[in-house]
Length: 320
Image 1 (spheres, helix red, strand yellow):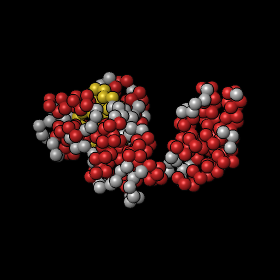
Image 2 (cartoon, helix red, strand yellow):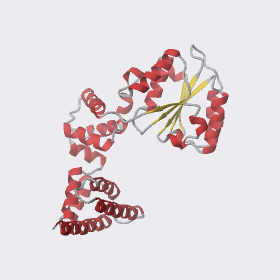
Image 3 (cartoon, one colour):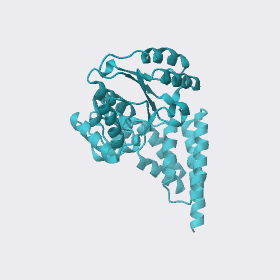
Image 4 (cartoon, one colour):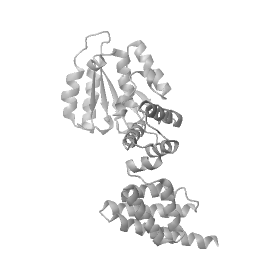
């Protein structure tokens, strides 16, 4: 996996997140780490930063001093009472007098498990430091939050993200075109891990990576084609729009659920009065609900196109 192959090994290799990196390097220099809460969206380097901190603190044998645990897989109180407590209670041998326990997706723990974790953190703070990783820190109980140094991770800048993708493409001898990068950027929405996975999937096709290759491997329609679909419907050409819909679903293998999300995104870019954007958003929500309930993709999306035709006609009359 390229995400692992190109994962930074040291804090100095982390791109962006400069303030966070500087604080963590201070911990390494002092050889003292508090309990930490790493919070932020997926793919922003939270787990990587925790592993880099451990590497720089303990050296090449850092794996002997840490435990990684994804608590979304084991959400209950038993994993805290058994696995976590067993690891936390023993003092390591070495220059650094504590181990590090990395709890990934800690915001998915049950309330009881979090209470048990709080007690464990209090009892074994001399021998173990905890790094909690969460997408939604508000789901972590206040007694735990108050015991942790907070770190807020943000999406990488556009320059850093594109730079990383170009670097990986060069190392893997993959031809990555500009419109391919733009497509990856749009789909990944700042998530570096997702962007690298898309790049690897696109590279497996064996062709220069352009936007068509990217949209093809992720099962997503080209945004230009989605805009054309909406425009055609709102110009009153229902049959032509329905044909475009079928072509999109066949060409890209995109599901009704994924296409409805793209239509929703494009609706808010239309040059129409705000009230009609709101009504169309409501119609899109109804369509998505019917799809979730098991409705046929083509039938439900065709009904949405009919609604777009109606709205287009009303707006056209108002402008006359």
